[in-house]
Length: 287
Image (cartoon, rainbow, N blue to C red; front, side, top):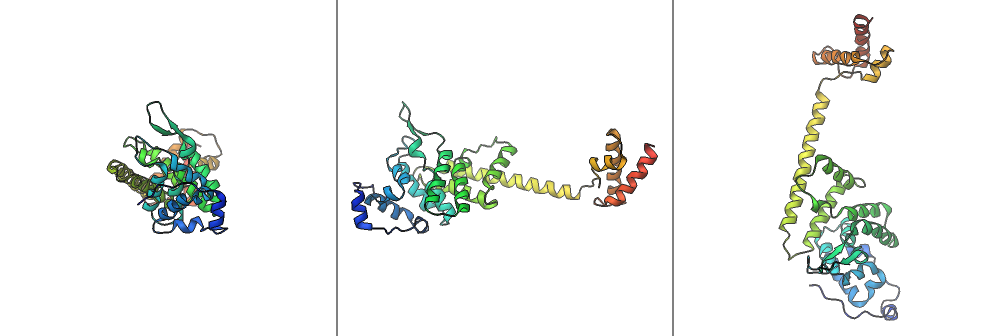
């Protein structure tokens, strides 16, 4: 159970109690329940010295959309995600920019414009100060910047939009980047429990199904491209071979070579034989 932070203590009290000792953040993040330590640090005043940007989230309301403040939500998300450094750091920092971007509208609603983009930059600085590896920092920055995208998915997204999201998620860690992004979105949702999250989970399931559908279609297309008869020579190679300007004859020659491949008289990768056939075709058709 989460405990609301008590009275903040002076820096001198902190130093007297804790001296120079500090448990590394990366170790805390691999605990079964990192929130126990972070909330305890917040109570003691330690968090304001170690991670002031995280401590600042304690005063950030998310009403009326969510009942928990940004800090409590973050703690729940950290506990909910799998204990790898990439995922735990991403969960810890995914909403780190909600304090500096907090705006309350006249109707009493909380907004955090571009907290994903700003948070990505903040995450890089925080992790660098903790001595984390640049590769890990890059992966976490990517996840923080993308953490809102999966839950914004709609069925009317184009395949191009899906591919852009995949490319961005996989830019640092390949397919692991996509899996980490989905895991972060799922933990983000669980961070709002006991509020209803069924709709969000359905959105993630739909996104995953759509991605699988596109991957299967791309795979089928790759197989078809690998087996479909094609001319061994492309247009550039044909123009160089003929030493003449472009024209409809280039397409006609490619069609001829493709039909030779289809008939089994020419291999689709046999450029030498294709060049010989092309010279004969040029002699009989154009000269």
